[in-house]
Structures are given as structure tokens and as C-alpha cells.
Length: 78
Image 1 (cartoon, rainbow, N blue to C red):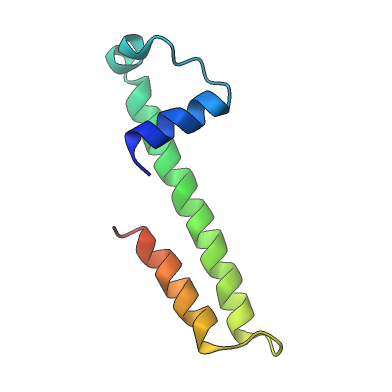
Image 2 (image 1 turned 90 degrees about the vertical axis):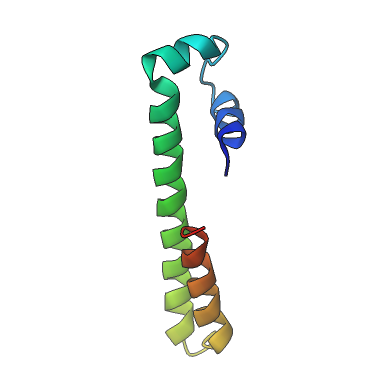
């Protein structure tokens, strides 16, 4: 997710970002970007944890669920 994606999502969520210059001057844009990064990390971990649960579930257990959890966590390292 890049900066443009973050602002697009913020607009969809109802943030008033029409005064972009004011955002940069006040530092709100950096706060918003940090917030988006933290939310994405939290969501990745939640997805990876679901894969971890499925990896030991008798009906769904497979190596692919373990690999999926690893791949999801690795996205945060890019």
C-alpha cells in the first residue's frame, strides 16, 4: 500500500482531505500513513493467525496453510 492508496482509502472512509497542503504542514498526513501501516500489519497478522489455526485443524490441515501464513507475514517485510 503506497501513500496514494492510503489517501484514497481515507477519502472513502469520509476523511476530509481536500486541503492536502494543510495536512502536510500539520503532519497529519504522516500520522495517517503510520495509522494505515499499523492497521495493515494488524490485518495481516489476523489473517496469518487464521491460517495457523487451519494448519492444525483436522479437516483443513496441510502444508499450504502453513505456507500461506508465512507468505502473509512476509508481506509486511517488503
